[in-house]
Length: 122
Image (cartoon, rainbow, N blue to C red; front, side):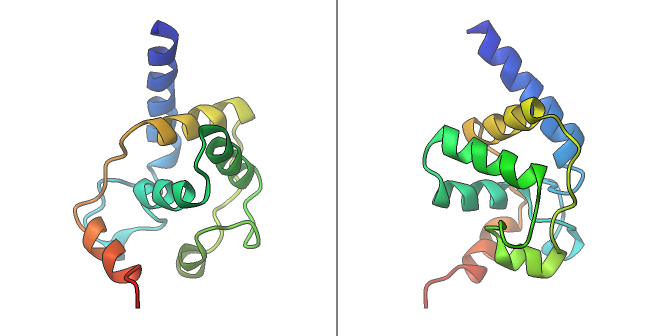
């Protein structure tokens, strides 16, 4: 049990240090962000990948070599461009992706309203 807690803490530290500078859960509005908040990334990837392994593999694959073709979040790519390639080890990316998959991710206050507006069924 201690090992998974250590791993979760390491995942949190890596995510906070490396991911939240762009995927900020504390942004004040959709207008000030430079990338989708992490909750949006998690929500979209969970819609596509319903197992931890598939989710982690997809996040790692995209972060290692982000391309427009591989992007699930087409609207985000249109707004922000393709994410810059990240120079992280596969092991660290796996820790980040597992943390995102297994942990409730904080959402910006404005997110729910924006998400519902952007993704409402016609």
